[in-house]
Image 1: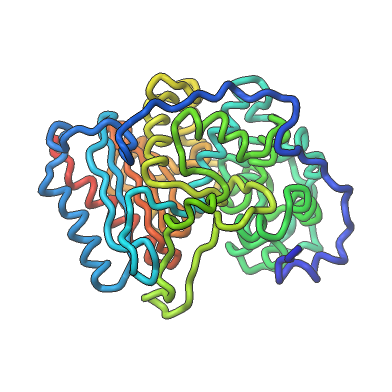
Image 2: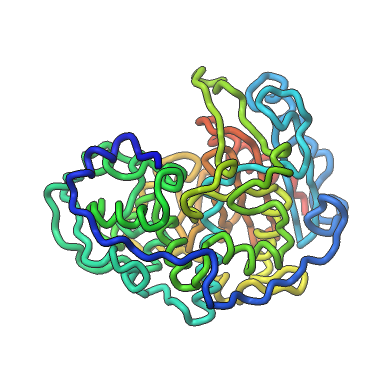
Length: 439
């Protein structure tokens, strides 16, 4: 098995913990009955309506294609897919440019993209569905499900050799809102950060679930639980909590409770061989810095189904997922979550006692908070167009999603842009969509 290039030697001297027993693909805990999705027009994720009937100006919507096509012609991105729903209807669903970084194949609307962190809200929904059945609670200590993470210690100033006891256990809520004290190694430069897995994908490529938890148990936390929003691998731990609570592997849990009922036909943790011709790839060289780039998430079986980043999907599938949440947990008669549960998921869970450093970085400067695996817009200026109460999340490989309940708007943007330019497109697509709203 491959090992993380930084952590292997440094951690070899740390005490090994007993192997954590994680569930197999399925045990004797039955999932909710899977329901077949209803038929619909090919590639159309929702019933269509004319943009004008939904309060969107067609000529202003055309600016989306004009902007993207100009950047495609200039060699800035290979292609993209944009899906917009308003008032529960499909208003816009277009593909632009090329599927492959070599720019030889047209982009199809059902192109498959690695979601990266847009996996997180799906892992959040799976976990909340277990809460609704009484299998876990938001305030449960994580050690109830993963005993190796009991009795945590916290590094002092990023020094793993100098620690103090954690003042309280990590809770399931902390995993969902990134206040667990667990952090990805790429988001800091202390000695402790250099020992941590650099991200979800690296963790899933180098460990199975048991090995990942054992590695975290060998290291102290970066922060005291419940004090700092520290982005990274908390949602990967959340997925393993959901596995323990359900007796299913995360991918199987999501398939039975979310993907099949919603008709998310191309969403999962591994792209089938028959569908690999639809897998979107980035330009071979980042046009901004000249560095080679590629994405392979979803092309190889992960060591575990990492809830933080390992899933793949299409714009149409993800639009159905987001529309279900905007609808209060149901779509086309199939209920995934209760309305009160969705309301809890998409409200701000960061109080004044929690530091939230993300609001100092684009595009989320200003008045933002964080819910249960989604970012949430507070009142006031927020660096992007939209209304208070909007929520969503993005992916490091160029994907983005947001929902604006006041405008009854759902937007999914899919592109293979693993470089820094993805931040530009999050803001640009946000402006291009909102400027088209005229009613």
